[in-house]
Length: 193
Image 1 (tube, rainbow, N blue to C red):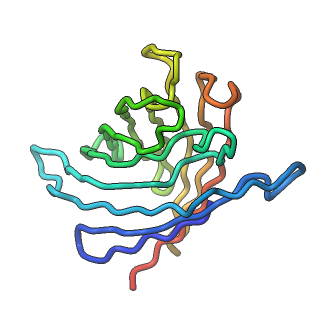
Image 2 (cartoon, helix red, strand yellow):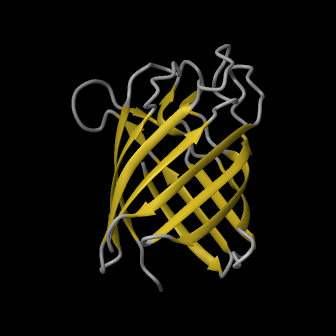
């Protein structure tokens, strides 16, 4: 998955992404059906007493396009609302949570979903993170509290704007498209222009 995000204004980010699975290794290459589009607006800045609040839209699903199902393994967030708050605690710890409503409805599951997570700095350049997406919009008939996507990982940041992360997704092996843990390598380049 390759994506670009641009900060148009101080509180507005826009972006697009496109991807494929099977580019490395064996098997067929399956390209995403459409590019993904992204816009986020920070409605409220974080303060000492209150979290930051943002609304947005993201049409990019994750972990591969399923041509037969006409959706991604993990559906795109769609329209979302998220709150986040940072604290000083042996470095920095951040908490976030929100809800989303996707427009990928080919499986008939029209529920909104809820997610929450945290990130903790370990050293100056290393952070650990975890997130649980309840996936109410992606769980088909497997209704229940623990049928979502639990992900955890580590990220290393550098002085030159490169961030590298390694994540494990679906750690509870919920049966979305398959019941396997997904590994993801993430490389991000940030530049102010």
